[in-house]
Image 1 (tube, rainbow over the protein chains, first blue to last red):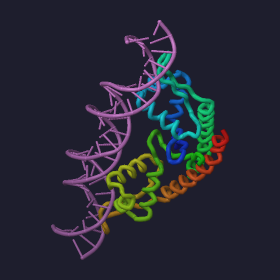
Image 2: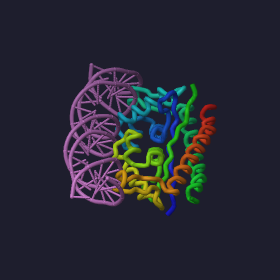
Image 3: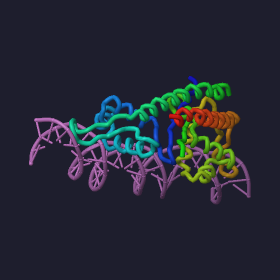
Length: 112
Length: 112
DNA sequence: TTTCGTTATGTCTTTGCAAATATAACGAAT
DNA sequence: ATTCGTTATATTTGCAAAGACATAACGAAA
């Protein structure tokens, strides 16, 4: 059985985490469900944790990543902006490219 | 201020962590000091934690990474095997290559 | 056979983070 | 004005990981 190489990447904006795997999962769930509370349930995390994650994302980003509405018909909701959708897409691409890159690099260890 | 991309990589052997940044730091400190207890002190972690890390490294690796001796002149000591030194070197190279690769990938986000 | 500094290991305590719980604020619709 | 399901936030509770502490085992040398 050979070795495996794994990685985690994240993007920071002046020392605050903007995006990581968990935040990207959350953003995708928001896009799918239309609300933060439903997204939290689908990921099986507390609403509070989800809110804190989303809050830090929006505070770190240069432009809004989601638009949240309180009250009104249905109680409110949350949805991704165009910018948010582009960020998610770019993160996924970079992550996948990183995995491919590292798999190649692993040869350096296998042949020792 | 632009975004920054960061990463952590680690190497696993059948679902156990073999090498990560912390373990590599420890191995380097062992090489420098010649003993596990001195290495732990230099890294400001408890001896127990250092021992647990080193133990899991040696249990996961295909070949011994350190040779530890108990008792005798000076009380004993620990030193890296050739294999251990090669692993550390390879890890550092892969890690640096990964950073360079990700820095290039970051452009995909900057231009959104 | 005593000393020494190390490796090796168990146990107990702390403590920082996660989870649970509670509740306020909101605004459209009725 | 009341209802409703959200977002937003504070407070309390629980727990697992980390740390502190203690001690056994070891072997060369004096």
